[in-house]
Image (cartoon, rainbow, N blue to C red):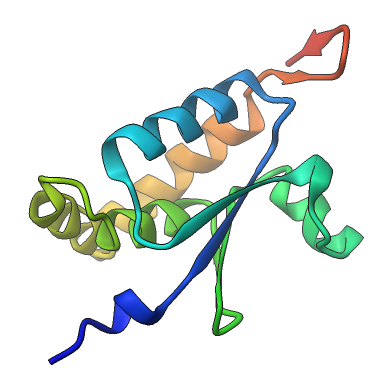
Length: 127
């Protein structure tokens, strides 16, 4: 039986002017390695303005079926679609992230970090 994820493709949109975001993308590529994922800089994306504005606040993963995963749920989906050598463990973590208590706490932590991250332009960085 074919794995339904193997037929899915994803675009991961990220803030390419954010040091934390750039480090996160590097980590995701190296350790999580989600299946069939294209990494798209928000500054070069073709998303409409409303989606870009939200994606500057919450990382965005979009499937080829046009399903949107925002913030915390982006991480859960990427963990569950990992093809790294320890993908089984990451899949379990991604599933556990949907338990009500973990989801509630995880979303709050995600939003706190994302709203307090450093944002940079070509010459300056601000909190």
